[in-house]
Amino acid sequence: MIREFGTGDIVYLVFAARWTLALTALAFTGGACVGLVLAVMRISSLAPLRILASCYIQIVQGTPLLVWLFLFYFGLSIAGLPVNAWTAAAFAYSIYGGAFLGEIWRGALIAVAPTQWEAGASLGLTYVQQMRHIIMPQAVRIATPPTIGFLVQLIKNTSLAATIGFVELTREGQLTSASTYKPFAVYMTVACIYFLICFPLTQWSRRLEERFNVAR
Amino acid sequence: MSRVELTNVSKYYGPLRVLDDVSLSIETGEVIAIIGRSGSGKSTLLRCLNGLEPIQAGEILIDGVKVNDPDTDLRKLRQNVGIVFQSFNLFPHLSVSDNITLAPRLVLKQGPDQARKLAADVLARVGLADKIDAMPQQLSGGQQQRVAIARSLAMNPQLMLFDEVTSALDPELTGEVLRVLEGVAREGMTMILVTHEMGFARHFATRIVFMHQGKVWEQGPVADTLSHPQTAELKSFLDAVLN
Ligand SMILES: Nc1ncnc2c1ncn2[C@@H]1O[C@H](COP(=O)(O)OP(=O)(O)O)[C@@H](O)[C@H]1O
Ligand SMILES: [Mg+2]
Image (cartoon, rainbow over all chains, first blue to last red):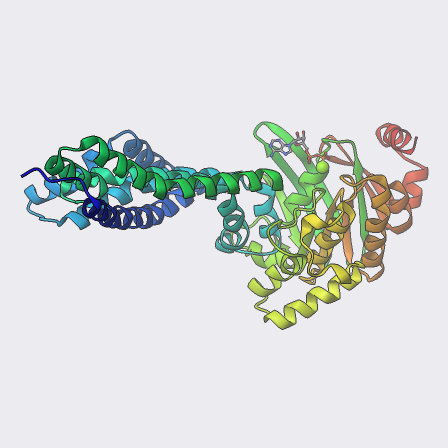
C-alpha cells in the first residue's frame, strides 16, 4: 500500500495550505477585534478597565494555546454545548491572539506623544475623536512591524488546530508521510510551503521597520 | 465681566504647591506677558486656564464660565480658548491643511470646502498660504509654529494662550513667529503669553505678570513694571534676562 511521494502529493499539500491560511485569517480577525478592545482598555483612565484587561492578558499569555483549543472543542461539548471545530478554533484563536495583539497595540498607543492628546483636547475634540483621528493613525505606523511579526507566529501556530480535527498543512504532511514513508521529503515540502508564506511577510515587516526608523 | 478671572487659585502636584493663591483679572483685548524663572508655574497656569490640569482650590472664570466645575463642558470652553505650545505639537501624520481643518470639521461640523477655505485664510494671516499642502516635517521650526498658531486661529477663539512659543526655535526663526503674534495682537485678540522675549513684551503687552514660586509676585503696566520693579526678585530676574 506504500505509494510514491509525487507531484500529486505536493498539490495536496498546497491545497491543505488553504486551511492554514483560512485559519490564520480567522484567528487574526478575531484576535484583532479582541486586541483592539484590550488595548483601548489598557490605556483607559478608568482603573477597573485597565486591571481587567491586564488580568486577561496575563492569564492568556500564561497558558498554552493548545489548552484553549481543547477547552473550547472538548470541554464545551462535554458541558453539553457541542461546538464544531471552526467555532472552537475561532474562540480559542481570538482569545489567544487578542492577548498578544492587545499588548502590542497598547505599546503603540502609548508610544504616541502625550502632547498629541493635549493638542487634540485643546482644539475641543472628544476623547474618541482624538483617538480616532490623532492617536490611532500614528499608532498604526508604530504597530505594523510587530503586528506582522505576530501574524507570522500565528501562521505557524495554526498547525495546533490539527489537534481538533483540521487537516491543514502540517496535518496533511503527517498523513502524506504516513502513506508514503518519505517523511524527510514530505516535511521538507511542508517547511518550504510555510517558509514561502512567511518569508514575504517578514521581509515586508523589516522594510517597514527600517522606513519607520528612518522617518524618526 | 472680565474675560479671565482667577480667584485664589492653588494647584498641587502631589505635595508640591505649583500655584499658590493666584488671583488675576484680565479684560477683553488685553495682552498679558507672563514672565518668571523656570519652574515658577507659568506653564501650569496656562494649562489650568483651558482645563488641561485641574486645580485644587479657588476659581477660574472665562467669560463667566467656571472652568473648574464638573458640570462645565470643557470641550465647548476649549473652542473659545486657543493654546499654542513651545513644541508646536502639530499632527505629524496630517498635512498642514488637515492639521488646521481637523477641528473645524469635527467640532464645528464644517464641510470640506468651507474648512479648506478657512485653512487658506488663516494660513494667509501667518504668511504661509503656499504651504497649505505641505507635511509638517517639510517645514522649518518657525513655519511649524506659525501653522500651530493658524490651527488655533481657525477655531476663532476669544482668548489665546501662548507658552514660550519661540523658545524651541533657532534665534533667526523667532522673528517670523513674533511678527505673527504682533499681527494677532493688533487684531484685538485677548492674549496671555509666557515669554522671555522682553522686547516683544515691552512693545505689545499691556501688562506684565511676574511669577515667582507659584505666586503672582508682581504685576503692572509694562513700561512701569519693567523700569521700576518693586520687588527684589523681579529686579534680579530682569537683571538676569536683560544682560
Ligand atoms: N506633570 C507634573 N507633575 C509633577 N510636577 C510638575 C508637573 N508639571 C510641572 N511640575 C512642576 O511644577 C512646577 C512648575 O512647573 P511649570 O509650570 O512647568 O513652570 P514654568 O513653566 O514656569 O517653567 C515645577 O516645579 C515643575 O517641576
Ligand atoms: Mg514652562
